[in-house]
Length: 248
Image (cartoon, rainbow, N blue to C red; front, top):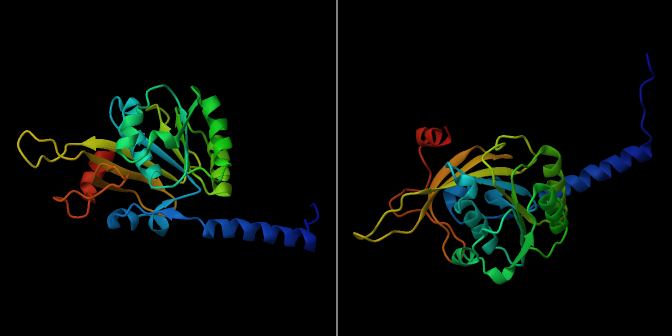
């Protein structure tokens, strides 16, 4: 039988200091509240964790090429000061649409990266710049190891990373993202005949560290990037059986 391993006092002290630094970083993680009670109460510390990686996908047959997921991301970043690094998968990002949800095109740095192998290192480099409001990457896949690298970079700088999935495949793959969201359009309510009401989105929190899955019916981001609860819905939360049907 091999002799038991022993650690020197100096090595143990270094290990304790490392654990304290990691724990301290986690305690200091800031959040961005959505400003909707039913959403914020469902999230750890009352909001979207900054200094973390969040995945966003859109449901539907053409969901990977649809616009709600990018608008959801833009609405989040509209409420954080500073420039945004947006790593593109293709040239289909419509700047005026971003402006309508509060993210002015002058704030966006467009990084023309067409493949995951180009987008991932660009995102990682961007996440090391503390002055950015956030980094967006349009990815087909987000495997475990690259997601860990992004998460570590985000934790170190405090910059939030939003990954928009550009393929309906591999959405269930395991990775280190802090949370996983799915958004999709929902019929709006017209106030008057022949009048379109404010757009509505189904917003689903599929997975999140320290939180349970949940879903809400919300009105789309306004010109300041803020979601809201429809007037004819109590708090935006969807009944459990409806959540199950939506997730099926």
